[in-house]
Length: 562
Ligand code: KIV
Ligand code: ZN
Image (cartoon, rainbow, N blue to C red; front, side, top):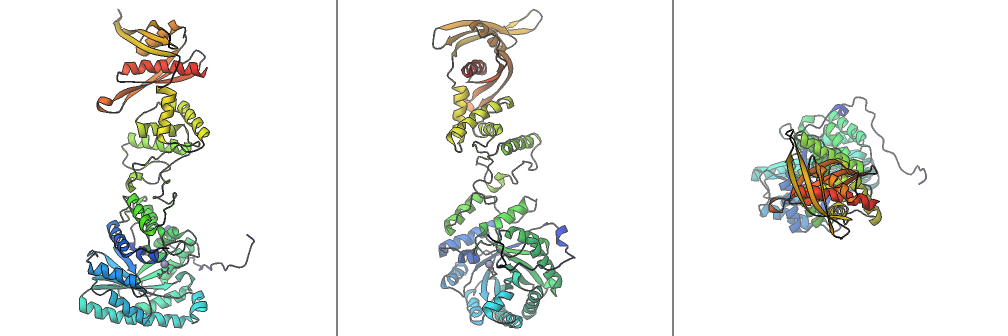
């Protein structure tokens, strides 16, 4: 792409007294979902009535207390959903529905008809205020824009007062200077101040001033400067709740929202997984769980993100991408060997230290906290390291391979991956383990054995091993040997087969499976006569048998490798 002067860069305000960079998000904002309005209007196939009701119920279940249900003056279906919610008694006592309307008389009147019977309502009205919209769409000056907003505000106040007097409902107002980002800061303050006056906003009855980045067009820090400046300049700041409605055109809606909160915003509008016009709205899942991982309770329940995602994908017919923060298929998966190793060590660290706090590298959140504990965290392909295969063996199959074995087994798994050229399943990892160790077809087979513990005169004991070993399917040869334990004794006995020089180095064992099916697994490390280290694994209900099979396995593997 050539360098061009086609685009007009955003003109940031010159702010020297910014305070927001030193602040922290210590409490959640008021969340207002616009899934049923902004999100729905952006769908190729908008949700039907039943799906909308389901979405409303889901949002209530997540804990959203303010839900924009539509634009009832704009379409019959939007009107219907509102009526269905109200007449069907689907709105919980502590949930406020929000309805959007342009600042135009007939639309405002129709909106009041649509909300009839609702107890808690936010009437949200807007008009475009940006320099660009004034120039190319409305062909009017700022005074004209202010007049439209104020006329709308006055009518809304009048109809609202009548409605509350008649029904005793709790009615609140929200005003959006649409395309706020492209509006001169002094003009944004001007129109909002006039609207607040027209609505009679007070500290007790504040008006929601929603500052939409209708089309995201600046850096998140520049937006935060705008928000802080707006809050500083707004007369009667206490009589307003500052809300943000970030779209994601530059891919930075989350950062815009987070820095906007630092800058003084108290409320966020957004959607699940960021559905919305063009590149979407602010994603509540990301921003909510970002807070959660910073030890701030977002007040939204994403503990079963899989269910929420499945529902979302069903009704929107959109797909949550694999890399979507917290919810994508691959976000709790590590392919790289060093990541797998560190995750493995993190799990061990937490186990050893009581695990009260989450301290696992490469996993910013405990997958279990979003209901994903059953997924394999570590997946295996040719990029995976030695720790990854061992991790899968332990997590999926309960085999705790000793550290010294990781490199040997990891190399076998890597060779397999390189050969098949794709990710491999845990079952394939297990099959490699069997092929390499427990089912290894080698030269020698242990047919039977007997161990006798013998007390020495010096009050020490040693073990005498007698066994039958078959070579290459031939007749069984009888061997015997002594050692300070069964493995040592067996290694010494192997000398009789001409297998001199196998030195026992290390041994580990544990049970796999449970109840009557439980077996002992023994991991044996021997040093071969040529100095190479070799591992063998034995499995049996009898742990001595497992250990002795492990010795024979180690020898066979060494002989196989030549
Ligand atoms: O993006 C936007 O500006 C809107 C307004 C109507 C709030 O959706
Ligand atoms: Zn929007």
